[in-house]
Length: 343
Ligand code: AOF
Ligand code: ZN
Image (cartoon, rainbow, N blue to C red; front, side, top):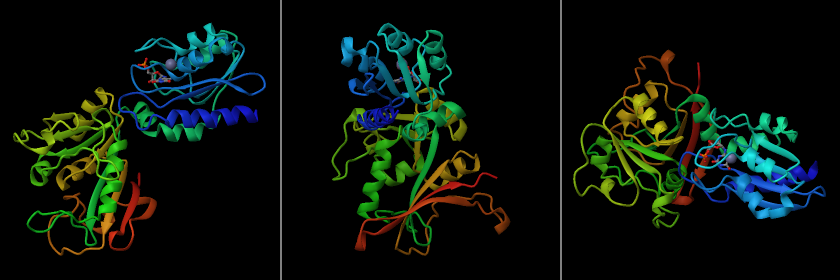
């Protein structure tokens, strides 16, 4: 059993190895071991349209797959989607036992475990499931709730302002905090902002690397602008750094439905204050990441517009997940990660 756990750890590392792959599919890794616990093949899933992890591992093992145990981070699929069912591939390869971590929340693909058992294959579910669920947190959330996971990110001054009185906001947060925020963008399936803030800031909304270097187009999040106006020709949002989608509505639920339909399961909401308030008031913010900079502005727009709070009894409270200092010395900003208290 110890070797199955070790193999699952390896499978989890393989699942994460392609990085934050864009698109609708989960991250999955698979290791095949023989009856001494020695690995005979391994594979991972590189995104929609590519072979599933189990199929890649079977190909890697060749004839040695026969009689082996498949250790996989997600319950094998039972459907024909972009590729064929993994349960059929496992059965055809002569795999004797299958151990998986997360249960598949996708109703179209689920039921693989049951089909393996019916075929006489020994199965075990849930090994290191907490780690595997964490790896595909937003994907699992999206399948269970029917909409993407929404993280609202903003940078504010110590007195909670997101721009000075004249609208200028470059830069409230430090270079280190901005680099950290680019890592959030690089992980997201979509980065979303209202047309108003895109116009004011001439925001590009693409992700850049740690040293400010461009990231490959295929690894970029979808840039999403909501609102009825078109960004003007020459606006940075219209460059070819990343794919861009304009959604001509201000209704947050409609926006998320449109993104779900495109397979997006993880949205980074970047404002501005009106859009942030609309999502918050609709109960469509799951997590907040706030970068607080040691700077005072005294006037200027708040990070979020009116939330309908008139008195302390209506204050919107959050549970803190983590408080971190990003950067050092003059670059030090505080990053607060929090989730709305569900009442
Ligand atoms: C993956 N990779 O390694 C496994 C998956 O459209 P398809 O055919 O690629 O099927 C995607 C579904 O298959 C996915 O939502 C999940 O339920 C299941 N298993 N998916 O992308 C894999 N094992
Ligand atoms: Zn599959």
